Length: 210
Ligand SMILES: N[C@@H](CCC(=O)N[C@@H](CS)C(=O)NCC(=O)O)C(=O)O
Image (cartoon, rainbow, N blue to C red; front, side, top):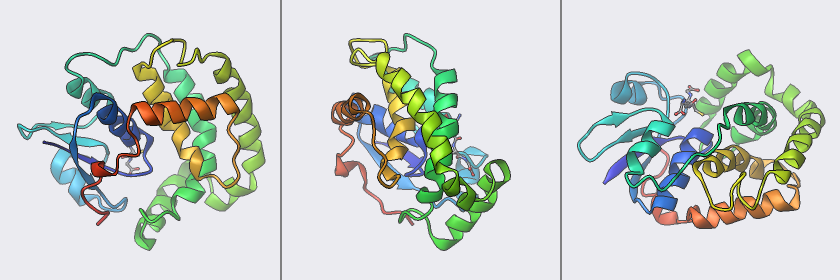
């Protein structure tokens, strides 16, 4: 069985978990504490997750390469480039959700402090992100309204593609945001992807966060 080293909150890790669910690929789940630099460095040479260890003990350290490796029958097509879309969505989504991520059970006090120090360099104090919530939220709502018009019912497609997994992984973090209201079609879109990707399959989680 392949082994996935991941962070629960990380959208790049979520995309691999969604793909595994869609492709019906079981995996050993190993959640790495966010402040643990040593484990990912010893496995992959750098502190970046997700990491996949294949059955032959090969290491793959990029989410898209991992999905490509797992999707041997090429069931997950990608018909448009969504890099720009993901980057624009990510700007607002991550500023909104980061201050809440750090209070989930995934983060020990040490992980929280490590995350804060790392992320505040780019985005400023997490408390300020909360204070600016309405600003990020109004920009995001414009983006989500536009995204809604591009769902038919999947992203520019009648069938699920890799793009839906990439987009959903970014949007998924918003479920943590108190009282955030998704536009109806986006909520339905995410729930459909959740179902198709068996994202509530608790058997995926075989190990607890250390
Ligand atoms: N291009 C990489 C990006 C992965 C990535 O940015 N992972 C983040 C977590 S969301 C990470 O491991 N960052 C290390 C750190 O923040 O210490 C991929 O698609 O796999």
